[in-house]
Structures are given as C-alpha cells and as structure tokens.
Image (cartoon, rainbow, N blue to C red; front, side):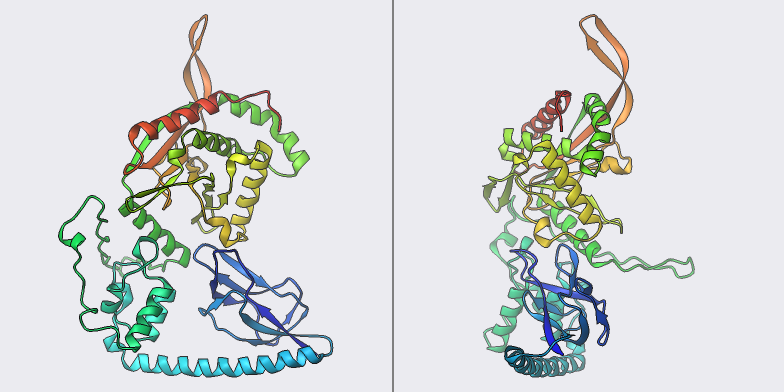
Length: 450
C-alpha cells in the first residue's frame, strides 16, 4: 500500500490560507477520487477539498478551526500500490513532519492549559466594539494578549483592522521585551484631539438586548458569513457619506425582446436568458462614459480604476448575499455577459465560487426587484464608491407621447436606485450616471440578436 498526501489546493492568487470548518470523512473511511474530504472557509467563500485518489483516510493532520496555508498537507490517504524509493523517502519525511506536528500540538496544548490558568487576566474579546477575526482572537487567546492590549494594536487591514501579521508582530515584540507599559495604554493622536472631516465615525456601541425566557425568546448565533456581512455593512456606513438618486425607466422594449428570444436561447444554450446581463451591459457602458464612478478612495487620494469589474450581488440558500465579480465587463458582448452571469450565479448558489471570484470589484449591482421591492437604498460595497439597485419590473399606466398626441398606455417600468459616496461623487455625477443608463435601456436595439 502507498500513502499519498492531500494538500490544501491553491484557491486564487490573493488567498494564502484557509480555515478548516469541518471534516466530511473520518480516519478509516473509504474515499473515491474527486470525493470531498473536508470543508474550508476563507474570508469570502466556503468550499470543499476533494481527494485526488481512491483510497482510505489514514490520518488527519489538522483539527477543525485550524488555519492551514495553501500547499500544506492536511491529510494522508492510503492507496493501492507498492511504495517505491521516492515514496519511502516521502514517508520518512512524513514521519519527521508527524513528529513536528505532534511536538507543535504538545506546545499548543501546553499554551492552552497555561491560558486557562490565566483566564482571569484575559478579557472577553467579544466585549469590544472593534471587529476582530476568529483567527486574530485565537492567536490573542493562545498568547494571553488581553483585550486592552488588542485594542491598542494599530491594524494594517481594511478600516485599520488587526490582521494576522499585526497580532503576530505584536506577540513577537512582546516576547522580545519591545512592548512597554506605555505602549499598552490607549494612544491619543493629534487626529483624536482635533477632529477633521476625514476622521472616521466612532464604532457603534454594543447594546445588550435582554432575553425574555418566559416569552420563549430564542437566541440564534450568527454564522460566519452573517458576522462578516454585519461587520462590512457597519464599516461601510461609517466610512462613506451615502447619498441616493432615483430614476424610473421604461423597459417595455427590453421586456418584449427578451420574451421573443428567451425560448430559443434556452434551447440553444441550455440556460435561461434573464434581464440581468442586459442591465449589466448597460452599467458597463455607462461606467465607460463616467469613469469617475469607477474609483476608490485611499485617505486623501482617489484611485482611478482602469478595469471595469462589476460585482453582482447573488442570494445564497441561507438568505445571505455574496458578490461575485464579472471582470472586464465592458469587453463582453451580450452573449458573453449572459454566460458569465449564469455561471457565477449558479456557482454562488451551490457554494462553488473561488475566492478570487469575489474580489477586485470596482462597482456593484444588486437586484432588489428579485424580492418584489420597487426600489432600495443599498449600502456601498467598500472600497467602491457606488452601487446600483434594480427594482422590480411592473406593469403601470403611463403617458405615451406620439406625433398625434399623448395617450395613456400600459408599460413595463422599473426604478433604478443609485447609492454613491458623496465624499467624492457629487449629486450631479450621481444623477447623470443613472440618467445615461436610463437612455441606454430605453434606446435598446430590439433588432439585435444574441
């Protein structure tokens, strides 16, 4: 019998590690090639790690909640076949690795035992109004970093969040005696003494909500995705000055064109033709006309984005939203856009998105009409400066202008809701943007093919 390593696969250029959320197989279980062995999670998506071989799981090298680097061995699978010299060499290396893992596990167990004995000196990190990822909390807990210390670590992540590298650097400095008592005290900066227009809003206070057991109140813990979304939404409202503009669009021609072509499209392509690719195409064209919408803000600097990467909010089975990104959307024709929209939406629902496919967006579109809403006021997806909400398409009576005079007719109409960051996008630009998109949609070429 030969032993094969199951490694954490590469999940995109920007992803270096993932957290093991659950093991789908136990030691001794038979595994088929391409069968999922464990589930992992990054900051963006959850995914499964399949086996490359038929065999038996003989060893799990990491427990649930462990953070594993890309390329690191997570399990050993025994397969049919004889070991060759290279396999024997690999096994000896595996033995050494196993010893290292056992030693590391012993050290972790010892540090955890020590942490328990000093629990009184370690604060509950949940008491903080500042966001800390589970990984940062775990490292802080294992290294006996108190909440007061954690609160005063200057974060280098988004919105000054403390990253893994920040907490590890602090722990290293602490062990080397570089952290003094002065450093553990809250720092008062010049910005705190003299507020400026660029100063960020104070974190929202944590309000304790009483639970009435007699009234049969039920407490439901937020899942990982829910916590991330909650944090992102709060951070966005505290970062950007949200302003909205609204406009009503007559999409009767688009409605009729789609009805004319949808059956032939599904028969030919094997998938549905929705309104979404039509709207996304119009958004990409409008952004090309108004490139100052395709920007992000970095302090006092504005970063102009050369690529138009459209985020497309998609609903997950649990009710949460995820935003896959259509890269270089302005380079796609309508057929290419339809294919991309269907592919990303389908894999989002099935949890099959790659981490890189949810990053790098420069502008986002969300379809609130899917849930019957006429319009919405969406929150900007940081670090972008704009987001468009598509309302429900409705049959409404409307005044129709003709050379022979005006009359009342039944039209298909919808509202576009544009939220934008008033720090860098003024009302004129925000309004002109959706006015131009209205023009593109109402001037839709009904003779075009797909």
